[in-house]
Length: 51
Image 1 (cartoon, one colour):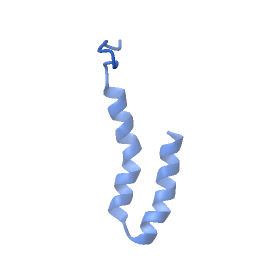
Image 2 (cartoon, one colour):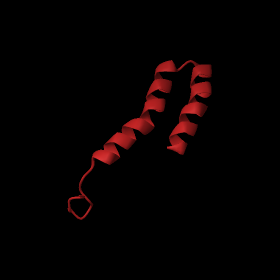
Image 3 (tube, one colour):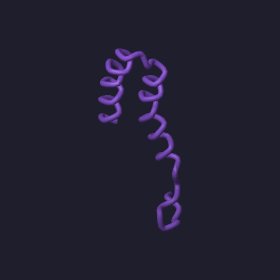
Image 4 (cartoon, one colour):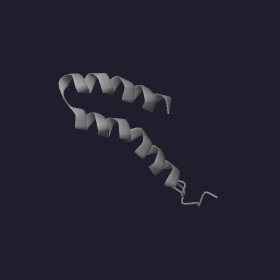
């Protein structure tokens, strides 16, 4: 999550400077979406269910 925070802080200043406000919103939301996706995976690569 620290990398997500750094990514959003850096992209906030960089992307708004060049005028990409919508892209900033997607960039800031990416770490949270990635966390939700990885926490919803219940199977290991070997096919076993994680309890």
